[in-house]
Image 1 (tube, protein in one colour):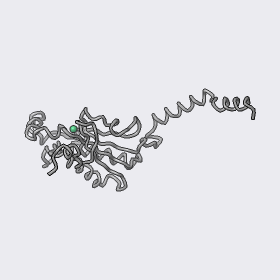
Image 2: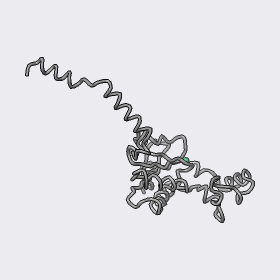
Image 3: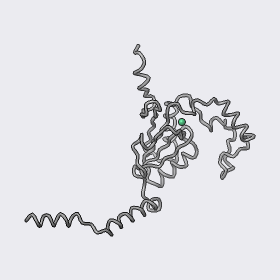
Image 4: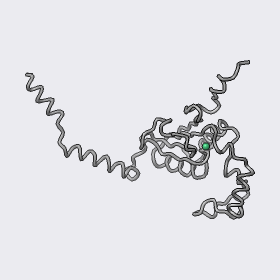
Length: 208
Ligand SMILES: [Zn+2]
């Protein structure tokens, strides 16, 4: 093969028709816009449950790009009725096979005193017994439940994190082969740790 032919061959190889590139872009865009109806799952087949706290960079700390995961954030990153509803849909119908729970240190759910919350909500609603907890589902009320069990404050974030994982594992709405993991995000260090694994505390205290 002469130098010239090789050169021409390389040029041929590098040359794409403009319409091919555009067609590819169009297909990609259509797939993106119609992912659900085309049964395209998230990039990582992942649902993340995290606290709504503004200090948690959920995507960054889990190494996620747009499109990789569905992310459900609520006060405390707690497994509520709507988390179960969302997990049920994504694991049964959208090919999601992994759930990650992210709780964090210094969570507002740990600092708010129960009585203050109870009194505040009582005053706001004018009576917790008659207050709708789901406007489209008035049948669903707190009933005999304590409003604080609905609010879900926490004393120990590591225990709370492990409990959220257990709630998802025990839910009959979530298939048994879904992998469920929980992490505590330390707002002080910007790192994740496994629940119960308080490295910072361990290494900053004298060993006895
Ligand atoms: Zn929080």
